[in-house]
Length: 224
Image (cartoon, rainbow, N blue to C red; front, side, top):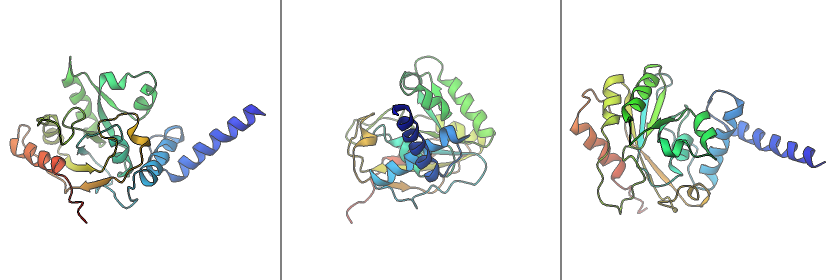
């Protein structure tokens, strides 16, 4: 009886996830997580279903955002109709409990202390295949109250090399700022500001970096 109940519960969880999934990540074994991500972001964090990135239907694209918590990747996934391949620090990618999830999602580990260029080459090949790359150009969680931190130039290089447009996103309203594992389960009301796409042609463009910085660091006007 116990096994029967457990099997039924798992089937129900997977079924609900698949029903609400909007992106094909490569099969039902991972698509059900897409559905639950959207449910969590909608009902726990107030992200409206119509809040969607204006990504091309096919072809490469790069999504960038400010990074305030462990909720941020889920918010970007919920705002996309295409799979996102996140660049993620190797030490996070290798965490025992969640490594399987990062691997299924196609995350690209970045060895920040050794060979970060290898991750850029992998991301470039993904863009050349027409995939969508997502990254947090501050390189780590960075709150508005923290001392200024320069954003990394890898996003500009990837955009110039691949011809992919950059889609900046500003995240506001996360209650569990600075938290990693608690943030997805802490109710709040998040606002995603989706900025117009940027086309970048110079791999060392300081002007483009400044445009990205302004887009992801400028808080949304939530006075209304």
